[in-house]
Image (cartoon, helix red, strand yellow):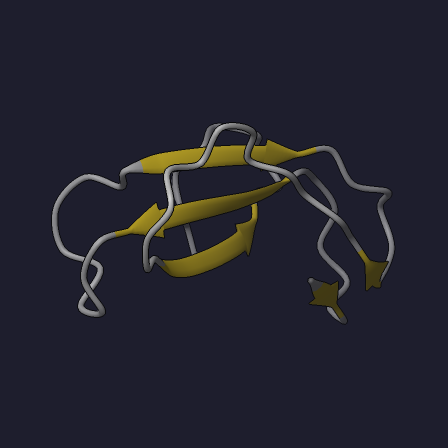
Length: 68
């Protein structure tokens, strides 16, 4: 993924089964990230075959909670 903002902290990527992102995510991946814009790679080992809807955010507090 590419992040172009100025906020620091890890990136969180959440995997959902539906495009409305309702309910609990199926999986969450915490991606350690350098405190500057750039391209970041992430991996979710043993992900079952299927379709997923993802959203990602940078978390300055490293709490795992999205706070815009």
